[in-house]
Image 1: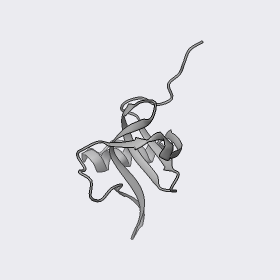
Image 2: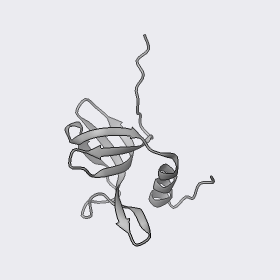
Image 3: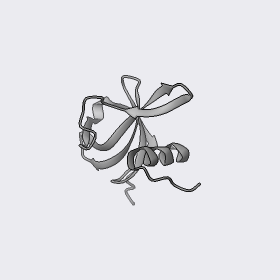
Length: 97
């Protein structure tokens, strides 16, 4: 029987926290108790619709954040257009279609 690991380092995921916030981030590491996330962003309402903004306004944006698994309600693969937007926002690189 093969054990399939659903998420791995480098995956861009959507995470729904028990607080109700939704976070989009790249996974840097996973252990038994936590996720290490690179440049986590949250969904915010902007003047022209939903935008990605800082998950923690006062945290160093260049440092990874450790999120306890007990804070996570759901984790899922990020939808393709949101994943592309995340890459654009966090790296400045625009991807084609």
